[in-house]
Image (cartoon, rainbow, N blue to C red):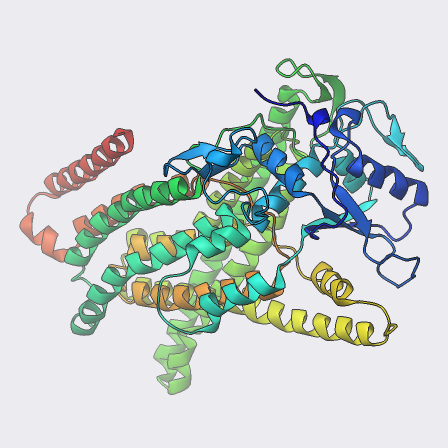
Length: 612
């Protein structure tokens, strides 16, 4: 029988600092008092029943600490929260079950005095869940801010955030655990498996699944790289002998995703997320509308007409996306004009400089592609937010669709044009190599080198500031919080998966004419593993753990790319001189055979997807 919250006393005098809440510098005292009271108040009174204290106590005034609060919770409170969020833990009989407080003794490694039964990431996830579900009861506004209206059921943290009162909420690092994780993860430059279970315990399942997929994809590229090196060496000058490699591409691109599904399911079961219960999805923070009654939950919440949302999508977002696609195609044609000019210059001069000039248009175009991708990303985020989607999942689906459509056309349109309009395999190889290598170099610089340098400068400023403060105050936590609050916020795995998605496209679509594509992808991914690990541990704030059972919508994106790669490689095989030689008199038979092979491949993939 589930026991009422009111029967538990979850207060504890000493607690482990887990989460930081930073308010604006000019936040009024009555607002701070009201918020802290809501956090510590009992659940039956509409509170979160957590523990809170200011960063610096005993009346000491230190710049940068006045509006920063540390959130924690007693062990009992965290166990009750684990039941609320539906965490799945391993039982003594080796089975995986949803944790309940009343059956706590049946779970492995549980003891009343064992405060490590829940990982720190799980504890922080529980606190985040409770803070996000801290809702108004009888209040009509935030105390001290009459313009910040509240109504029964409104999320208090979301209202504080939208009114600029709440600056940020982030989980604290565990310095000792982070040091151990870094030592076995990225400090030892060895080619070995990543400590995925340790990553999951520290950062949660979403981050762990990304690094698992990055590692899996890197190993999956090795057969392509091994075959590609001799293929590249012996057929370097013969651009048309790619039939065998294209055939291998067909099988490889499908098999690796099917095997990944199995690996993913195994990890999800081991981590307890495969059977984790789905909770009713709350409205996303940016959703707004007229206050009304949700017909499903019966609660008051903003209501927005789906017809108005559809109007925004089809009358504004869709035309804007089409305009951006047209702009991308226009820039592509400018690039081809530059290629023609470079070749004319080379034919007239025949010098070393003119030979180098042949690569300049491709390099410029690759840089422009990266710049356009990043600019479009900001525009897509603004548009998707303006569409006012109620659920976070709906928001993410529309954002991913917008970004993937533009990125696919922007990155691959020139390759398709060269392959199927110009029929120039030499230029296709040059263009693919330039786009792949340039994008990898730019991404490493923008995502790792530059942020690391900026973070190092910020750390030096904070440490200098700490040294200037009073010596009789314990400033270890103060220094940690100020170091971490100045770090960049990790915005999720979207950009990381997008980079792998584009890389998968370069390899699976046209690597048959440039077999070294897989080699460069492997080398990039090895450095990516270490640079991403460094970013997570040293550059970004610790992200909140987010339980998940797979890589989400990206699985569909990669499967879609596989279907496109099947069609592309079948078309390239049909265009090859070797296959054309088998049908010297009838091109129609060749086309029919290629289409039949492609359709059989599609049917096989769909049947695999339906197999339980």
